[in-house]
Every structure is written in structure tokens, then in C-alpha cells.
Length: 363
Figure 1 (spheres, helix red, strand yellow):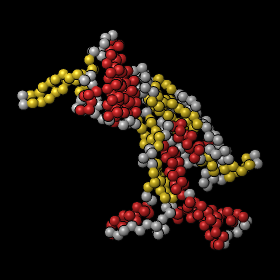
Figure 2 (cartoon, one colour):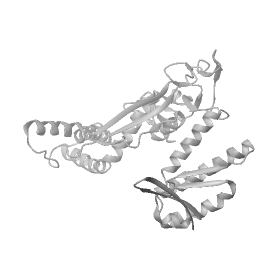
Figure 3 (cartoon, helix red, strand yellow):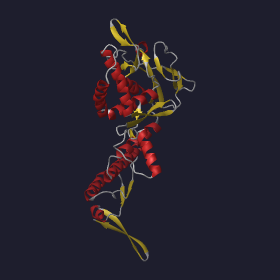
Figure 4 (spheres, one colour):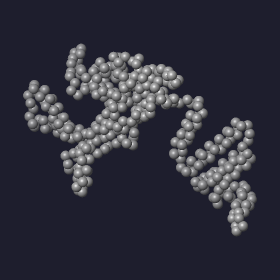
């Protein structure tokens, strides 16, 4: 892992990739110099190494690749990054997958069928057509860049007819090779294709999802479909943009605190959130008065116990009694009738024909 940072005129930090030799590295960036547009961003160049040996799991023989012999071992001339290899690169780039919008989608054949049924007013007939096994999947992901988020969508459609044609070509090559070039019979072809097709149909959902994900990684990380074994042996240089705010800045610290409190409050019920909010407000009041070197004389709580049940209101009054020693006066405004008997003193406000009347009542 390596970082190459160069200072810019404005005092920020940018990333200069010109120091990486293209003959020694696979640079996965369309430009060689990037400027950090935001002061809270840090750009890093991360090196990812993949093993060019197809037996190690980071790559596989690219489709249509020719084979040659090196040191008595057959090796492909072209290799492609496999799923484990691509996920290493995606992790280095900081790829974030949208979990909501990454899901199965309707295949093209189904979309055409739906459009035709809508135009003719007929019901869609699913389950008995030639495309009933077709599956499509889409992934939406994003990586942070020097100017914001780069969002990319990729999809893959698993089509039964296409898979059948692929298996027929594969069967002809394998069966002919085993028979020293003679063509296999139709029966042998059908048996081979049907056996393989049953297995692939059972795995089609996972295959479509995986292919869609790999297409997304290739598109968002600027990866080619295939590399020579020599190229695959070179480190891949990935640009990663990370948040690096100045935590000494009071505004940054306040924003982080507000975000943490907001995200934490989502996990609380109404009564729990109220109690947390009350505790924070009392703690902040005491902290500010302590820093100012003076005692906080008055604490006013307006409808603070509205979402609480009977047990919660009893705990609320107990809390007020405990914090009362830190304040000269604690004033609680409430419309809860069952709360008034729990308070030691209260002002009862009533309205008559002449206006409002205030009466001091001791418990």
C-alpha cells in the first residue's frame, strides 16, 4: 500500500500519479493528477497485488485465450480478474453498494411481454413461455472522488437460449477433442447439454447476481476485461478518497456530535428519546454554568413528560428531585393531571369568567 501526496497552491493536498511507471503498474485512473476539491478530503493511491497464476484464485483464463507452455506447464496468454480479485480492488477503492436499489429486475423478454399485454389488454401469461427461466440482476454502487460521489449502475441478464448455445459450442469442442477431431453425435450433444443445463438453471440466480456485481466493479474501477499474465503480475493502483476532517475544528466536532445523537435517537422509543434529550439538556446546562463559574439559577421544562407512561413519569419526578440541588428553581410546565400530586409544590392555573387565576399548592 502506498500513498503519493503533493501539496497544491491553496495549501490542500492532491494526488499525483505521474510517479508510477505505466510499464510497472496498472493505473486504474483516467487522469494522473487529482486535486482535492474539498478541504475535508484526503486522496490516497492504494496498491493491490493479484496473483497471475490461474490456480491461485485471483484470476482465470480469459474467454478465447490461447494456451502456451512455460516451464512444462500450460498457461493462458490472457487472464481476467476473478471475483476474489475484483473484490480486493473494490475494497481498496472504497466501493459502496446501494443495498436498496441493488436487486433482481425484470428480464428484457418479460418487459416486452408486459408491454405487449398492456397494449392489447390481455393478461400476462408467466411460467409457460420460453423465457420463464430468464433472470436479471442490477447493482448500483458508488465511490467517493475528488469532486463528490461517482455513481454507476450495472446489470446482467441470464438467458436460457444463450446458455444453451454456449453449452453446445463447449460440448462440440470437448467431445471432438476426446474423439481426436471427430464430430460427436446429436444424442451425445443433447445428453451433455441437458446435464450441464440442469445444474446451471439451479444456479442462475447466484450467477446473475455475481456477474452483475463484477460488471459494476469493472466499470467503476476502470478495469479491462482481460490482461496478459505479465500485466496481471503488476500492482493495480487504485485512487481512494477518504474523509479527513479537522477534528480540532469546533464546527466539525459539533456536527459529528449532532449526527451521532440523531442516529442514536432513531433506536429509542418516544419516552426513551425524551429521557435522553432531558439528560443531555441538564448535562449541558450544568457544563456551561460550570465553565462560566456561576450557578444556573433556573431550569424550565415545558411538556417534558408528555410521551411518558405512569412509571416513566414517576422516574421523571425522581430525576427532578436529584438535579434540583444544582438549580435554584426548577419549573416544569405540564398538562398531565396525574403528575401534579408527585411534585412538592405547584402553581395551578385555572380560567374563570374574569380571566386566569393562579394558585400555589403544596403537596
